[in-house]
Image: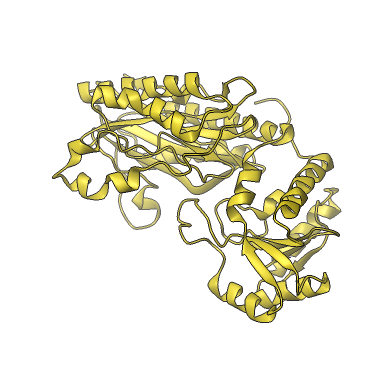
Length: 413
């Protein structure tokens, strides 16, 4: 890529802050506590254009304050300022405890106010019970007995989900990085190559473009017939990486993230000859993708899109291990489907995959221009699985595909 990477302006800061103040007014709040901590979505960055693994106090009137857990993050911040970067929130302090948060709220005259908090509840992966530390939360409550604090995590997520033009420029840049990473994966994938070499080729591209790989970093699995999904076990334990063989499906899910805007890439490569079942699943996954692109537009609901994208699976006798699509930035709404699960009854897979854990999450979400989604239709028969897809942006009259190479199975002869 030869074009200069996009950056965010102070106009974007002002746009975001005004939207957040509108949320505060709508909920009769005098201030907002936004937890970033180790949460997947790094919500503090929406207010600060930074991520310090901490939290932010955002008053309805006056200037926000950012808190981080260590002086190391403040030193890093100060060095960027010395180099000419203009911070959105100049007031960054060390204060990783609930008591430190309470002290800032008292300083702002908010110790008896009605406040909102983001992070107690969450829908992102691994955060079923939220991500605010329990000790931090209990200490905050004890230090501010006169305050009323209500959770507004879902309302905040809905606000963040709709992107402005500058944010979409970051999303498109992340998608271009993902496209190059997919191309690097294709070049590295050959029989006799270890999974670790493919993994390294992908990550070199992402990091080489000054981007991050949002949690879980990179999913990579291989084999002729496997529903295994998740980061390779060999990155977290002493386990030998698998060597690729003819007949394998080599599949990855990439999470390129630029400027805290993420795109997800579902790259599937067949080391031919491809068997008939995998070939069938590949056709069905692509059909589901095409139906999704034809269907997605403002005004429909998430449930409408699920019903459209699951129909090719229903007709072909397939099921889906993972959602057919989900929202991005934040990843809180999921197009899951229970279609085809009856074929798993009595199997080991059937003990894991039930109709209860394959229901859509947020089916009543109404699609709006500026929302970003990951299309990731996957078609399974038994333990054969094929997954394709890339980034999607909802436009005024339809949707924009951000990726091409990973939206269908690629073949290596």
